[in-house]
Length: 503
Ligand SMILES: Cc1cc2nc3c(=O)[nH]c(=O)nc-3n(C[C@H](O)[C@H](O)[C@H](O)COP(=O)(O)OP(=O)(O)OC[C@H]3O[C@@H](n4cnc5c(N)ncnc54)[C@H](O)[C@@H]3O)c2cc1C
Image (cartoon, helix red, strand yellow):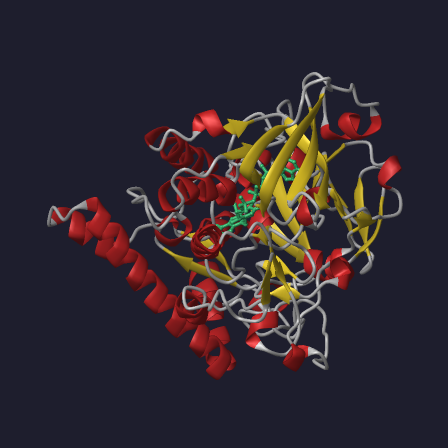
């Protein structure tokens, strides 16, 4: 049964009484599994359950099954703070899943995770200080009911059931197959075929070299270029420390610090001297593609580096595919699909047997769950974010949204520390409820869209900004994307600040 079926099919009511937990975690991706780990270790005695709509843990890393699927950040920082990463920095989805599986096994988290349960609604009652959660079992259609004092939203940022595909004229007339990487068909036979991959982000850049060897030819078709950074898929410091027989726990911590130190320096450079950084990045691409290649058209973005995530290309594999002639890049706009391929605005036609639309995600605000507070539907766009972790007027709920420019998990670990500290604080105070509220000094604060598009502007965010909470102009009411300030600020939050109303 698919997620779409679940939404369309009438629910089979369960006579079972609601099960009650202290905390309910939504999603068993990197954030939800991390949340379960932190709860277990930082809040012993707290009862919890993790509900996941898919058949297993992993989130992003089981949803995406296209050839070559891999991380684009290093696993020393994408890995959890508490579990050493011992492989090459850039990892395949299979390696990430193995790592997460070890976290689950080593900490006995499996009994707390329930799979194939898609949460449809969550209703808060101030009278009972409880969330009532309704989920549907995706295998049987049965409705499951839970009650929880605290909801920990680890649902990620995109809708897992379906990726984003723009509407193009003529797609019905195309005689070949159109595929979105988020729903990669197991039976897709691309050997010896001509393939067009539409897109310019990390997914397209991963997919093209992964299939180029097997295809007759792969064309990466992009409207505009993206920045890439190349390097070896190895960490010299980690390798040296291993030769010195240093303990893996130490290696993990030392290499994390070094990676973060280098990233901070790079981010600073991007802001201080964007032209020089651009020249360096393009110089690295030119080293692979040669002086006659048209880097200006195909690899020189119009935006400043770091406004969008810079994808890492390990060992320059995308560029090697292009220099070998097995892959090529076309920078143009789509006029329409035709029977045989794509007609471009320039008048050129690209022929293909398969067209892959690596065109991004549909933003998923809080798991597509219908929320209610004391009988009133909750519209998140009417709330203000508390440091990108909680929302004004929404009791007992924390939200995990990681970093765009640094590894997601750095923030999911920090948010987990905050949630555990908050839960322990509530327990110590005997409070059953905490709700972020604007303080008297915040009353006239200007409210702005959640993210400053001058700062970060990927398509899925721009398309969904109107659905997201608002931000203010003070640190408490902003969703910072800066790990280097948050690593000190979040642990120092005063939980008795007037921004938290306890009950
Ligand atoms: C191809 C790809 C590569 C990426 N590479 C990197 C990278 O290298 N570095 C980086 O930092 N980030 C990367 N990201 C971003 C990535 O999504 C996050 O880093 C991270 O994996 C997100 O973890 P998560 O647990 O927060 O969310 P997800 O992985 O999205 O997991 C959320 C889980 O919640 C479940 N869920 C959602 N709604 C409900 C509901 N209503 N009921 C029940 N379950 C629900 C989903 O089924 C899913 O399993 C990448 C993203 C993609 C798509």
